[in-house]
Length: 211
Image (spheres, rainbow, N blue to C red):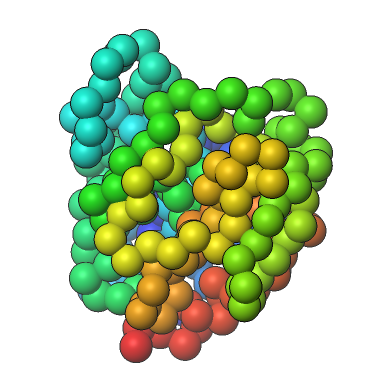
């Protein structure tokens, strides 16, 4: 059985349990509550949503520490360590919301520390935020949910923008170039069956293994 390392906030656990019901041949280990197998037994990395990245891990000045909401240093320490290892080994990576930001920072990028209009309640589960895709993007979901107040600013090394919010050009989807599978999405695909193509693509790559 293929194994996936992750860290999932308690409130998001039911969503990911639902998602992985479709993939009984894959086993994810949640580092928040489980001891993971040795790293050499891990096949992929799933970076999920949650609180803001702690100031000490960012690659930029933070003019107002109050912009960093509910940081979790233990989680940051774990995620940045495993992100480095997964990238070095070219493991399949799916990065969601906070994870999308972690991926960018791990690759040397920076964040907008507070943006308007992406955390309004109707957006959290309503797939109403319209996206504008670049040409030849394989996975396209025209309208998505949104619940974040930070976003990618300067791109990390090798990341390519696949989609932006139509309303304000906020980066909503990225892919790591010249890499087997590394996709970052600012929205939450675990919240709706609409997004199953994303998880299907990730699962396919996990089954294929590192290349």
